[in-house]
Image (tube, rainbow, N blue to C red; front, side):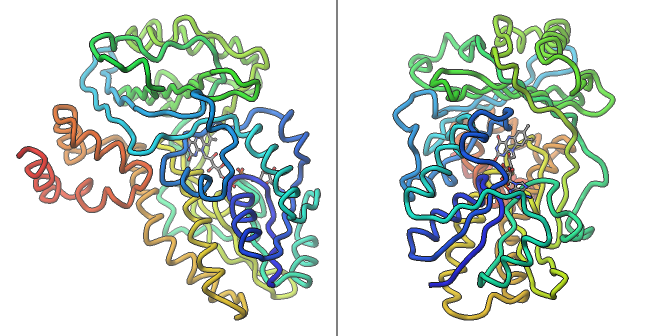
Length: 418
Ligand SMILES: Cc1cc2nc3c(=O)[nH]c(=O)nc-3n(C[C@H](O)[C@H](O)[C@H](O)COP(=O)(O)OP(=O)(O)OC[C@H]3O[C@@H](n4cnc5c(N)ncnc54)[C@H](O)[C@@H]3O)c2cc1C
């Protein structure tokens, strides 16, 4: 069987590794951290993972946390507020398949152990170009799944696919406890049986995203994520300062400016470990095929090639679907050489849908235009349309063409009005 080297044991690397292992390949996974270091290391972004992506993990029998109510989210509320705190509209809908939301340290730590238990070869090493060169002599294919900001010199920025030259948000995601996701929903019978995400857009200022997740101590925690438009009111966090103080400052801003959002977080505080992720992420697409000094090609996937701002959760979800496709492409390629041309054609096939992940993200970053506003208004008054909207987020290519085309938008609204 063919030998495949995968650099990076995050969502992409691990998921692909498990799929290859099950199909009889000999994947070697290179991780710069042991399972213990991942589990006890600094907090990673907490990600909401939608049904289509979760299905890959069901299929690979990797959802060890399924028993816990706190690991899933069934229903999402999108609310739009004016900068003065007035609620302008709400779209809410239930996911066809629940989303998953868990501490990724727990997930990847357990997966790394499981990878070895299932017979996978794991090498703990912080890889560099020389390591890739060695792998390329002993493996048929080298995949770089080392995440954002790694091996950038090897994968050139693709200006034709990159829409921004600067980060579009300051992102501050706090691990918290004590949020109340059910405030203002007393008129919805049965809603307390569900786990909810509450997504608040503050027009021109940014977004505040709140969702429950399963912590590594098996409790319900919540992440509160500020997506601040640079220079606008919420752009205030200092990633070198004390986490609890930064959260208190963020909360105070919400209390003064957005009382309805504040009701959900007023009793919350940062978790005792004081975890957060804070920074500015330039959305970037890189050319996925890199060339080693020897001339051998290597293939960058997931965040190593495409980085989205996390505003509408397209990063890990995209990585997961990409690895589902790449596994099929590797199997279909049989015994043929994994050439640079093959890598590029695999990427081009993924791009057919992935471009809509970026387009959906850009629309959220730029703020909805007239077509999207019309659709959102209609969805706020039509539960079926709202449900369609909510379920497209995990498969953003399904927004095409109606989310960006006036006539198609009218057609869709008319269909849902009968
Ligand atoms: C604040 C925030 C919130 C987010 N929220 C969401 C969300 O809700 N939904 C969503 O879909 N996405 C979200 N994302 C994006 C998501 O986290 C990433 O898109 C996803 O984790 C990328 O997966 P990956 O496998 O490419 O990289 P990673 O998960 O980053 O994994 C890369 C791995 O490679 C290892 N590594 C790095 N360098 C080396 C090396 N030299 N040698 C060996 N190993 C190495 C790292 O230790 C790491 O374990 C969010 C991102 C941020 C910053």
